[in-house]
Structure formats: structure tokens, C-alpha cells
Image (cartoon, rainbow, N blue to C red; front, side):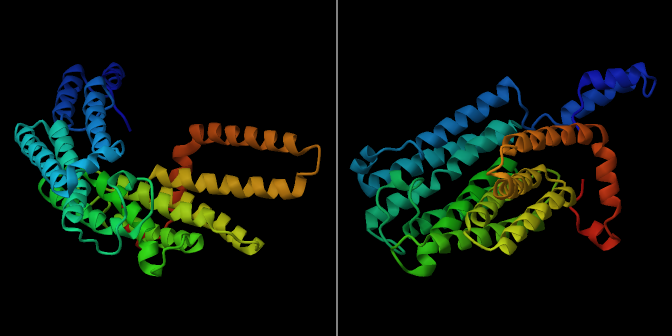
Length: 342
């Protein structure tokens, strides 16, 4: 629920609270949420600037950086990380939590580059030489594993000292990379085993979701969103790309996506319903295609189906709260205790 000042003024106009209480409540809420991220111009500027720096030192790094050599890359990345860490810690102590947390996040994002520079300098690779750093975000290779594990460790250490939710983003993001880069490590082969990559992604994504659930809502701030998001990407992506000619397995895929929609209610996480709805929709379209594809009515059937979904959205808008309450009331007591708190 999002509350604005106008909502409190409306409550005062309806005599739910008086004007003095509305003003005092708004002032207290403003102080309580002063360090939280908001979708306004200032916070957009904070995050846009941080993402530009992270992109410059990661996504958009070209082959020219290889001319610095491993030692040069290590020195530059450590210098950046130190500067970001000091500036972030100073901002954090001055209660500038969002810019401070973003600076610390930028420092964490220097970790893979620093580890790459060290490995390139010493020519020390855990599995194989993965090539130039510019390929880190492009190609799946076991040689990135040390960089990824170091980034996860650095992110978790930073989270221990700075409880800033966005710090969980690079940890979850790199865990998603680990899910893909584990395949050549497990198989020990240089070939591209597509089926094995799908299975590894599926099971690793499921492990990420379970792990995120275990820490969900353990603190006042939301540290679980990014873990759920990238866990679902790995799990649902691997599941959806699995090939099967069996109608039983396709129906099982449909049931799993229905379970994801149910999980959105159980965990109070909308991201689950997005992936679940896409899977259910894909299965229904598949059924319509194999049954009605040769029929001239096929476009009309899909149109009717789309309009039905829109109407369902209208019903959910009107009665969604009652539906959710009814669904939650069906959960047994032991399952209620397993749900993350509000």
C-alpha cells in the first residue's frame, strides 16, 4: 500500500483522524522513510549515475583495457574500489544512505575486474583461461568462476556492514552467472551441452529461490527481491527451454507455473505471478494452436482469449482483495507460520 499526503488529508476530511494527527503522522512517516529509495528525480539520478559507472567498468569495457596488463587492471580496479568504499562509508555515516549504499555497491562491482586482473597478472586460472574480460558478460565459461565467487563473498561482507537492499543485486546477479558457468565445470567438457545447461540452470535457480525464502523478511528492509528475481530467471528459463515431446511433461510444466502463481500469494511476491502467468499463457496458446491451428476460427479464439484475460484483470481489480483473503484463509495454520511476514 502506497500512502501519500493527500490520503492522510482525505482521512482527516472523513473524520477518521483530525488535521493535527494527519500532519504528525505524515511528518513521522517522512522521517522514517527518508533513507529509502523512491521513484523521484533525485533517486533516479542516484541510480542512473551508479549504473553508468557499473556499466562503464563492466558491460562496456573494451579490449583496449588488455593493454594495461593484469597488474595495471588490478591496480586501477582496486583504486576505484577503495575510492568508492571510502566515499560510500563517509556518506553512510552522514545518513546519506542511498548514495552511500550505491557507492558501496559500485565498489563491490569492481571485484570481478580486480580478480581478473590478478589472475591475468599471475596467469593463474582455476579451470581455464576464459579470454578477455570484455567477454565476461557475453560468454559462458568455467574460467569466470573465481571472479564470481569473489564477487559474491565481497557482496555478502558489504551487506554485513551496510544494510542496503540494492547490495543484494550484484550478489544475486552473479549467482545467476554461476548457474550458467557451472555447466562446463561439472561436465568437464569444452562442448556446448545445451540440455545440461538447462538442467543446471533449473536446479540452481530453484536452490536460489529456496535460499532467498530462508532469508526473506528476516529484516525490516527487503533484501530478498533480487534473489527471487534472478532465481526465477534461472529456474523458469531452464524449465521453459527444456525440450520434450511428451504431453504429460507439457502438462506438468503447466502445473508448475500454476504453482508459481500460488507461490505469489503464499510469499506475497508479485514477481512469481509474472513468470507463472507467462508459463500458463504459453501452455494455453500451445493447446489452442494444436487444436485450432488449421481452423479459420483460430484468430477469433485467441482474440476471445485475450479479451477474457483483460476481463479477468478487471475482476481482480474489483475483487482482488477478497479473493486474496479467501485464498489465504484456506491455508492451514502450519503453512501460515511458514509465510514471510508483512
